[in-house]
Length: 232
Length: 353
Image (cartoon, rainbow over all chains, first blue to last red; front, side, top):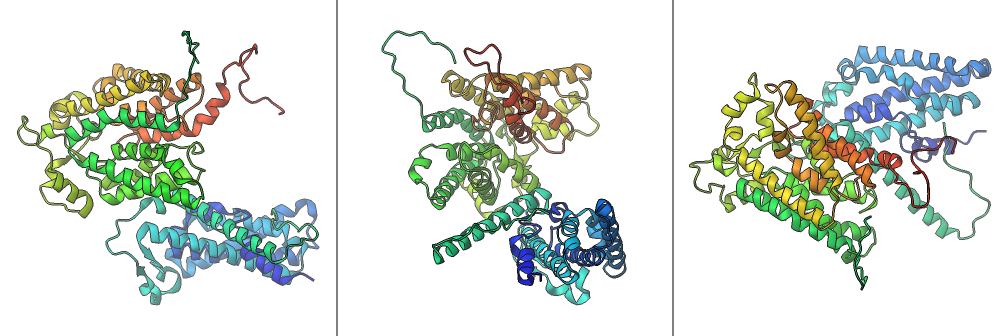
């Protein structure tokens, strides 16, 4: 039986698609200028991930190994199209802002990677959980990066949330600094690269500290540990 | 390396990083003096503020990295970085521009890469490029040389206390506009439908103020010659860079003198001289061998012309230097000199290795 706790931890932290696998960087760096953009793209990617993992896993016994990748692409593309139409219907303004990056979810390697590395080898429930956790992990990184860039670049937080959560969310916007001159660098893609680098560094520091603590707790180490990092 | 024939005793004192950096600082002084003379106290204040911040930040970062503080501060490299950034900022840049610049230069461009010697990009130029991209309004507000202010015989710069208030308190009276103006490069770029000749006659900063820029460039040139004389830098980078810029500017100028500025203009305005002798020659980020330095300099010269002519920013030295910094390891790979005893130089990458 699949270890659900491990799947959850893998998606959120140990094998986070953005921080560890470094997949899906193009949308990650391109649209995280504000929190709302980040959440929008994160939600869309998560939905696609869950849907594609579910379908790939359900059909895993019928897909011939030699042509599995084109079939995965077709499945993923169908879900992306559905999400795109949904966004056009319900969050049209956000759809306009995210633009080409919604159709480009098809090419997000994180999704293809999970389909090939996990869903086509595991039962449906585990695959859906894996898709959900990978998606949430991806979304959390997007949101953190979006928040960093929005605070630094515009001096606000949660601006334009009405694009995603309806008119009631219009007053969620927090103005952190009055008369902020704006820091264009944080909004532009180079700022996203630097922010991403800092986030990865932070994760590595935390991991190192945890590892040290673990070692201090049990000085006698037994068999070599399995590598946490999975390419996919 | 040259074989120097001298009589005994053959004593040799290796110059430390600190000695080299102190010479660079000394060589910058004529330029700093000329900037202060022609553009007012702003540059001097910026430089002092930048050095103060940089030394403090460097000490803090070195402490965080658990390394000996006084050892790293004594190499003066951070002072040079701050000095170069201060010299390239507009004289009335607000205090927080310098603060952001120094933060980026010291923390991101230098220590995140591993400190002095490990940084692939010139820290001062990373900071300058980031500031220029992020704060275009503040970074393009240049100062008029004093010769354009009031009657030409007196030294009409903004008084020291007013300059301090402009930089540190955001004090912006209406008459401050009299003291600010376009740089010659800006004036030449935004000349509308005029030919270069008409621009030279009608724009005050070109017609009357250009002397100030020539003087500042001459001061940097003097400093650069001093550095070459003291063997802190070699002549290769500055010569190749200025040569390439002059050649490409001459070609375009010969082709259409009404549309393209003359080579002398390109060499004597903007950051060309500062860039050629003080920024591009940074031993860490420059190509290593002499032959490599020549290619490195040529690249910078050509890029400066291209970016100035067809790019969107007022000056191009920072971008050109950063782009060539990126290319320096590649240049090194193909310009390795022949080692003594070998018939051929070991250049480039061998296939299948």
